[in-house]
Image (cartoon, rainbow, N blue to C red; front, side):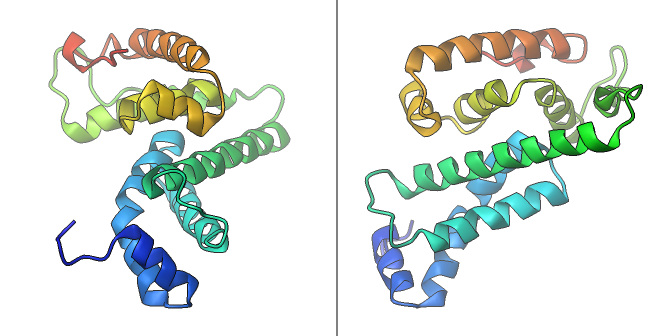
Amino acid sequence: MPASAPSDAELIARARDGQSRAFRQLVERYEDQVAATVIGMLGPGAEADDVGQETFIRFYESLDQYRGDAELSTYLTRIAINQSLKALKKRKRWYERFWSRDADPDAALTREPPVHGEEEIDARDHAELVHRALEHLSDDHRAVVVLRLLDGYSTRETAEMLDIPEGTVMSRLYRATSTLESLLRPYLSSDDLPSR
């Protein structure tokens, strides 16, 4: 952040006073981070866009409750994770309601991979494979992977954001990365596989 740029605390104080420009600056400062978290949880698309917007709406509505106990980036990530988990539950309810009993809701997740054999994959194909593999994880495991491996939060920070013990974070991370490795091994080199 440039030396002349206002701090998060200054922008929050101005936003609380009704200065919409200050809130826009906060959105611009953190929208990429929120987008990365939401896309990690939901995959790219309109649903992720909606959840990203909802994250900032929830933040705006809770401006008076934000006390600065956690970094703003952590606070926003917590909102983004919670909104993503709600969206995943809604998605599952939709599948249960509208897919016939004989249909396999996972069929959409098992399309042909974008590459075969020894062909090189580009960054877009790599990202698509990872997102597709993430969709096979439980919501709880996906949240841990997104926070620890994609967003780079520590085990302690992840535990605080998800309100679970650190041991649970490590256990879920181990199981999730084992699942991801088995799903991705046929398509990626060992250097590309997730590490714990």
